[in-house]
Length: 260
Length: 237
Image 1: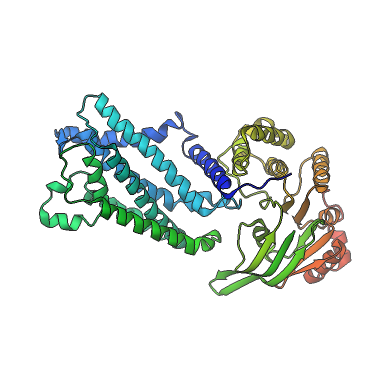
Image 2 (image 1 turned 90 degrees about the vertical axis):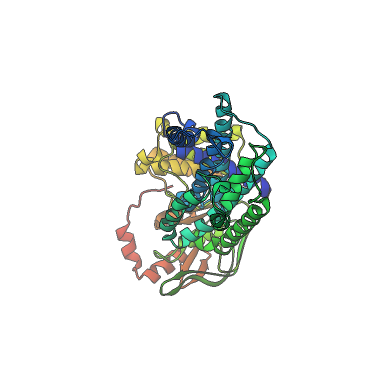
């Protein structure tokens, strides 16, 4: 007899199946295999660390260089990766929607969850590794770090979902969005802290929720870090708006996306 | 039990809506195997997708009581860069099979498809014959109340065909089939009733022969010509 599964069980099974498949298609074909999931972002961060080493700076805003990068450029690359993964989520999984258990949303969700887990491990490795190497690392509040990381994650997912839906309806978006994301790196407090900027510039830059996320993450590693300019409230509000928009866009368009 | 209530399905296009089904109300018989006819582009595959719950009607409702398969065919659901085993494993996981169940099913697929070491090789390296053997084996590895079979005819040597026929007969006691095929002889052998898609409507015929003659009439093929063109269709499935 065929037994009925509960929707929750089906959802879990689909996430598990897609996750295993995603890992396989992304890393399975390489030598070293799944290790590339961690090696790829770690190598990128190492490259940036070397740049700073040549610039002979050892501290930025009271943080050791590796910690500063792990709370700036690393989460920014994560943010960008979530969006680019969401942009191609539907086209890469198109032939799987033949199974009615697999919904388009699952394709987005799985890519996001995978990226979120990989980056978390990478950040822990980066910060733990730099402490091990002798840099000064002091974890003041792991909860602040986690909260900022989760808000940043869902902010990225909300935007990724919005852009992903737009991209599958209007494929031109796929060319436009990476172009916009590139300069965003330089105004998101990845290479500087917002506290070092002149006041007139601060007012403009602070509209960018990414700055709030990165600065709050930094405050988790330094007890005296100045967070008077940034707030969890603004970051949370932006995350709420982004995820709501993403889900509304998805809800309104998923049938249309299926017929592509 | 499959019932359609006022089902309308269209695809939006540049030059207005293309209707596939318009206000169709129909109950499909419980205990019959159904052959689906229609000229190319008349909506056979769309109907399959609607029944499988992959696509949704623009208006109306489709109720399916019982477990229905995904549209079983050659192409969909597989990824070329993954091996046969990995592809099959993915489907098992989607259907929430436990580790031991997955092992059993993979063993069945490997044995039935006769792929041997090719089972561990990427799907894109398969010949078309191997591919259809593989698709067929995967389709038969799961238990459903309704199997939606879209142009998936058995290929290979006589022995393999015999094997396919046997497993079909075995399943027929427990499950029903919906076939889409252009192979009339095969439909004649496998199906009890015919479903004919024409002019945005579904016409159901109580016997398969009636459905075939209606289909031929719509295609304007005189009956005897059909006989001479396809005197020896491969004895599929």
